Length: 89
Image (cartoon, rainbow, N blue to C red; front, side):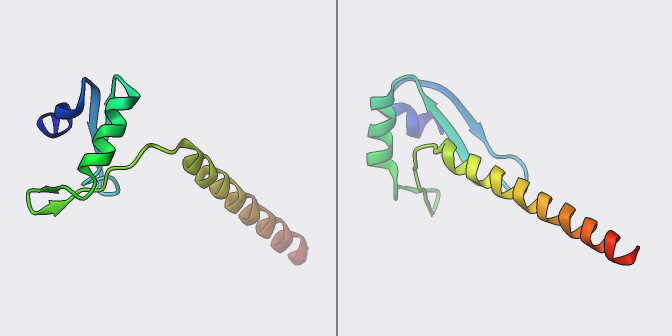
């Protein structure tokens, strides 16, 4: 990974997914945003070991929305339990 992404600039960190849900993914952190842009522009669709990679910018807002959805689902489940409990009384 360092060999592939390091060609586009100085790397601060690479974190590889290790759980079943994140296996095959990685976060690559560049020291400079312009180096990151260059890597995204050049490496998306690049073939590595017989697999094509997809390179995207990190979008924290998507994670916040997902977290918000999980909270809403939990609230709905709590309301369902309250309704069921009051219906049995």
